[in-house]
Length: 224
Image (cartoon, rainbow, N blue to C red):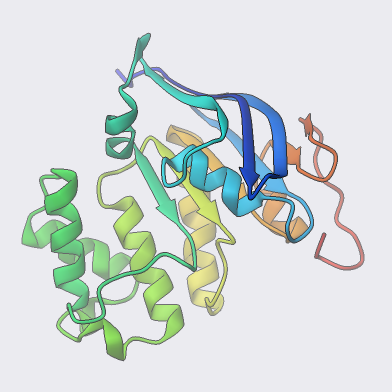
């Protein structure tokens, strides 16, 4: 039986150099629920998802993860979270395979050679598994970041600008990942693209600080 899961973002505030980026951000997501975070450039989309993923501290408020009614310690959130963003840094001196092997080690994931190779095959990088990451294109690096995020089958998957640097094959793969995650866990997508936002059932608009379950209409321009 699948564990029950709940992610709570509670009254979160973030300031940079005394400038308030956002304040009083609150939402709750459970299994099979999804949320898009939208807003103009500078509205704090990436900042909010970094805080949710535990990569950045909030000025005030907190993020809580609850499994089967038991709150998970904040330092253990990463065991249940996957995060993908164009700005994440990988290890250029390592091969694609070595990057995933290292990620499995630091996460304590039980990843065999077969598991890693299967994941590399799924993201379309198996033939380059022994090439140093420094030789990868930006699109190949983005695919490897998905392999990183999916290595431990995260209960919560957070994507920041998920289609960045990807060709059509890569975009189709991400759409597949999104649909799979919506069936078994929690999905959060930060995006400027209305079509990407429509993959989620709820929307948090950082321009208005409004949380809505309404589907976002596609405009003539696909950007917010």
